Length: 113
Length: 111
Image (cartoon, rainbow over all chains, first blue to last red; front, top):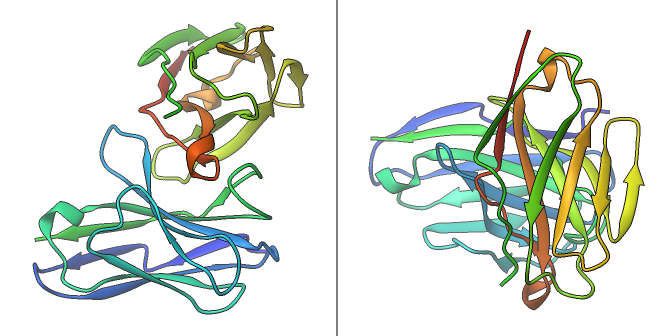
């Protein structure tokens, strides 16, 4: 039981490049989330998927797109990376919704030059 | 919008009990209070959740007064490994109870 896994662990991009962050969970959870965390700050919600087939914007969705590929996988795409997107990205999942315990992945550190 | 206020940092010593208080003056009737712990270079980890009075698990206790405008996380007999950032969270009832993450409290445990 791996919990929540994220790939890659670290990535360097040039401004304008695109990339997809992958997230998978093996806990049969319905809800999945993408957060970003900037230095010294709390997490900010980018997008979430309450259940398979649905996605909704969070607090800071601009510059990102998501895909809930199936119940296990939830990907985050940066179409044209900007230095302001330099951050640590966390994926999380919960059984159903925000009130349930969220289980977080190890994070992806992204540097945009 | 639900918002929490907690100390930016705290120090304590091994073996002591640590209490971290969080204020959430505009908590909605149906909101729960949730605490997470985050170690450097790791994702947050759930510690405890409560609605009112007292909740205890194997890691911590959570005290919530009757007016629910504040809560206190209590960590008994801390060790060096409890050095982490602790987040107090309430759901935003206007947006499906999305959790609003502040900067948290950086707890440093000294030997």
